[in-house]
Length: 384
Image 1 (cartoon, rainbow, N blue to C red):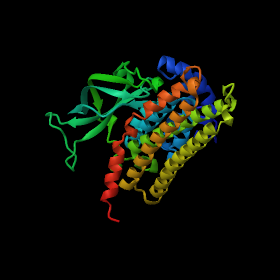
Image 2: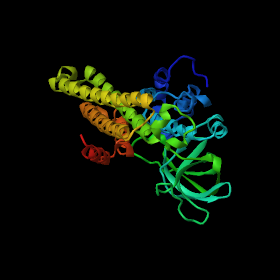
Image 3: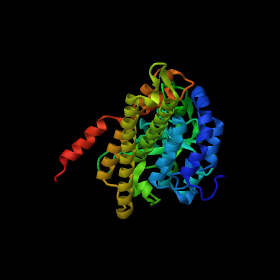
Image 4: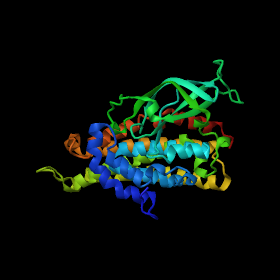
């Protein structure tokens, strides 16, 4: 890593933004992060934001991670999304023995990606065997290792159970070269993430390359960020990405309004009362969403450091704040896009890709409307 000592992850992200913005068109065209972008992210340690310090990672507080992604997202949403995905995947290192984690994350490029939970692995002597295909592996095209979350079968084919009767689920890890990647990510937004599918056939996974994900008692590393777990870290990180996209889109609309004339008769946009009101209201919406998300994250982090516990109430609060922030960010992007008028539809202007990226973000699991139901159910069950 060639990062300048003493320079924070947020400052590094901000410094890299112009280069990433300059590569954004090529990222969109090729549907991959460019080598130049991947290289500077690695050199500046951004992929290692949530990796344990014992392995040379930053083990950053959650707010630092969020702000890092927000800065990158202002330049390019696909880059921020891949960075967020792979950074959170690296949290699995906290549940691996040191030698295994070192092999995965300290052998260049040291990037891990994975997709959705699916399928099963059968227990065999010394580990597990699996034949399966998984989807939604953002960042897989940059990764040196892939992972998958699978239900475990005993050697007799019977599903294994945890002590509470739930299915045993493990995260299995294997070199990316062991899998076949399928180029399936033809999407309207986040095109550059290369969120493809990957497949293995009768692959043997040694026991040491498996872990229980988001299980507190399985943690080897005891830093507070690992008690948050990957699920809530994904939510906070991707909500921060949505804020970055919204900020960049609204700023572009404001810059346009300062210089654009709607017509010879109507005069400058900046002098139009309707435009002024829309800018004010939209700016307020964005600031409110950001304040709410970070206030929730900071309150959770403060309690976590004081008690060592990431409670059900914390998880619910994070889920609500992240979901709402993504939805509010989409509204901000919509308002800015419409404010720009016909200018917004041209690929040469900074609107249409961000519009598509934002609506791809809003379709992800972190923005599901059912999260409101889950939180509402919890609130209604409380005895006050």
